[in-house]
Length: 335
Image (cartoon, rainbow, N blue to C red; front, top):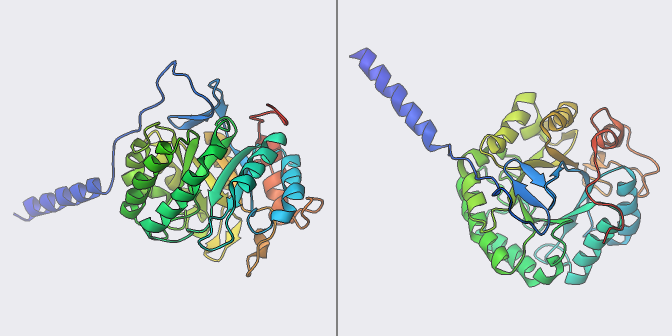
């Protein structure tokens, strides 16, 4: 009897675990399909011509330091970065960007040979789907900006929306807003940050395929931010990324530091693992950090003439850093 009870308890536990995971895999892009620009094909991001793209880039706080854009963009391009993640605002917390300011930032990146990844920062840590909808409405309102940028711009809808480690809230929010963006005519690759302030990458095991399949274009990728919680050990780094790749979903590390308020980060291993697995990474951030996290500045000067010894030198000049591993995606000044 005890043996039978033990077996039944084990079976119940297995069933409960199965209910927390989605063992489906996302479908890859149809063979021979034509694409207007960048597109997602299984675990890979590709150019319109079908060449794999591995993101190697840096975050820049555009919406707080707009007057430094010209200097910062040029300096980031000089590191060899093939992309730049551009922090924008929609007016919920900070002065809103406009269609003109977003278009200018995207074009500045293109002229310097970098893909532009634009995101709105106002919903950081927010759990309200209404907030996410307001951010989506901002993008829909400037949808014309994205026309013709499909080969050099990715839309990272909202930075770290959904502070809770909840795959359900995360799924419900993004399955609501992604169709809105497509209905507005935006054809670019969409990037979705993980919940849990971007660090709960394992949520993709439960809800990633649902979010991917809510996109009528099946052109959505995912991003995990790696600080102490998600990047504090080799095992956590792998688990937070394989939650996506094991389900044939494309993922990158959209932000990471070498330490943060929640602990140390295994940044050397993170960069090595990303290089070995052809996974993109973007370091946080070029300059302008404050409030006790100034150590996350990669550069001590906006022009990059002096890099921070503990952080900037590692990301840019390290063994698995940007200079050693970045490959161009678009040519500077390309039409």
